[in-house]
Image (cartoon, helix red, strand yellow):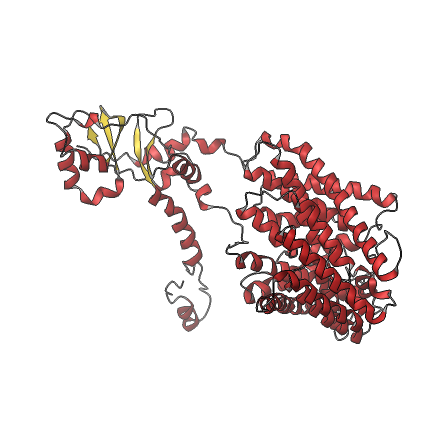
Length: 624
């Protein structure tokens, strides 16, 4: 028996000097295989823009037909109707139709779209039912066209994602590739609705892609840009509103006072995120207590929407004209408060009832109302300044996508003067939201269906550490030709080495193969006289190299369903360097925990008076 302990130089600096595999690694893992998805991505972008246009037309047609008795495909707010109390019946009828469509068509049309897309990506292999490409936009058009206080972006995100997923399902693709196309379709839909291609890309990455890799970002960007380019052509044809969607004039607010005010708006927006999220899911919980089938809930929500529309007509529908009024400062403080309260109530109850509709446009309306109300008491700035900050703060706080919120605001208005205040507002809103809410309005719905979404992204320590840094190079081995009885006796003499689990078989310092520890212990007693260790030796061995990342080793272990591998030289695969087990892979996580929990004072202020310096230099224990 022997216990080789290779010198550190073999796996340390000298090994690096010979040119390990790590020197051939790049910053990214994307391969040219992504190029075959580019044509399909562009097609998905075109389809996303078309679906966005069709959805806008459907909403406009239903709104104009029911509220004004006209056949018109130009989007118009239902607030100008003169139907009186009869108007209450319209959202009730819309809710009834959506409920029946959900019951007899697909239950997945319920909700605001983005959580459903998240769930499909996380647990559904990015496979969307083809019928959703028709049922989701149709149900959303009915819900919004009949006065529902929702946005079109959530449904179009799910519809665009469905298009990308369905297209991918016709090809021989992996779940990751289907996900890339699904998110590309979602971003294309948002870009087609709002004309905000960069914000659409960020939304796809921050909310849906669950990674920050070129293989996702490139495809999402191509689809979003394609959709926006086609939207420009739609605008030239007079089919969609020109950009920017909300043209405004801002005042410079880059002084210290303006930044402090931006922080105040951000804090208010973060608190509002808690209110809005709790309101939606409080309403959903209340509906679940009703002793009637969920298909009737949207009709009940329609009653509240209809009554709310009588109290504050500006709260009905998508509300783009209301956002424009808030940005222009044409609403009084009383009107802003009325819009916020009524919109909040009918929006929360409407979504809680399970009807179909998005959340982005309502968030913009309520956020702008918050900013406008704060603008009544904060010094300086124009109504557009405060409304824009409030819009971004609400979006960042509720969805926890601060970068999307910043770029979204800029692309909607084509104004860049508030970039710095927008940064302060969105970051503060984001901070408060993550501190007071465990989950966002989007991930809460996913969690209620039994799944968990972690929204944090970080470099995996298994991609940073190499095998040589965690492997065990003090390995118990056995020489070829030894009897099984001797091998068993030796293993019993080293009970502390059972975690090794593999016994390398050596000859003249070269590894011939391995024997599982358990095989020796179980079969040695039954083996005939003269049986040697070579009879159990497995020569077709899955191995690792010292210069491989732990991620590669973990993937190989998972692929072959093994928990331990010999570590050998890349150029001489029979030269044993050590063993690596699945327990060694946890050392990467241990390193992360140390970096997160270990606290130490690295520098000391020696120029302070003795009493102060001694207090600063007093050793402090680690706190978790």
